[in-house]
Length: 259
Image (cartoon, rainbow, N blue to C red; front, side):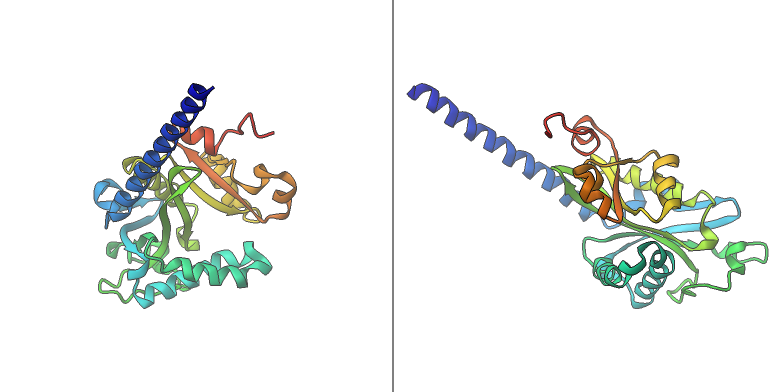
């Protein structure tokens, strides 16, 4: 009896040690990924996009280092794109997004119109409803951004895409897919198990874009899969794309022992 009790106690200690070591390893992965100042440096071919009448280039940013004009641009583009899908929830959500925007954990990819694209033939140059005209040195117009972070979900290190926002003139030209492919490359390089994001149910175009074009699935941590009754009351879904078996089991596949 004593031997069995001792054995059980030893197993618990070993298990506890394994859990702590795994947590430490995950924390190190997140810390290392977050310490990289410019993730674009690892992917030179992705720093420019010239297709379907668009000529833009990408640059990196960090939430607590954003200049005021760029903060204003982000706020304006979020309002233009998201006030509709959020509906009555927008007033509260906008305050949350403003706080998230300037977090030191926030990483950005900004999309700027290339100088040589400023011609009469270019649809970006013709857009008179520019949300921000760009007075940040090179005076090249911003036309969108991605806000992402390295976080842990269900003991899995993931890239969580907080925002992917493009101006109307830069939409439906393959740029969104291009940016998400870049995010997935960043996730792979930094040993993340998945890419995750939240989509408003009312944003049907975005939902179709992620689930059909990019093959993201509704995650097991999304309200509709945690509890269908609660999920029916929520206005959003959490989507994911996993890269290894552990991430797939925890974030995509419904556990057999849930019930």
